Image (cartoon, rainbow, N blue to C red; front, side, top):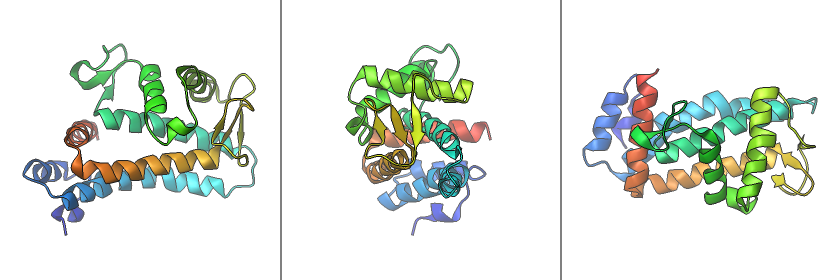
Length: 202
């Protein structure tokens, strides 16, 4: 069993990072995933989403989708190991100043999102009419609806997002990331950069 499982993030990040820098095993990386990432997003995002999904269908879908939109940007930044800084040049000092570009690249290049977002134009529509509209105006735009039914997570012809299927895409991506992390040096370096930054601002 990895010693990381006995540690807490963010308080013990220096000790966690030390293990990850000193010939870590696959079990160490999986433990880091659990302690630093999974525990954090479960408590702050996924458990609240599941509670809202049990609601009476009185508009909570907007709250769910807004949280999901925030999670997508975080996951996109996590994969790169970058942090948002307004106006920052793309990729300089591991920062990005354009959430649009980050968001669109993620949706059009990362499975399973690529199964429903198949073009840059569709990614732009999702970013402007859903993500930005929810964050800035507490609504979707151009006829987009949030539903708990429908065969697709995002249906660009019928202009709806199925908030429950959207959550399944997010969950699938997180589990795929978990499987890849122990064997991918680029993901590992990005993980360390991201959580060093999060720890420094905790």
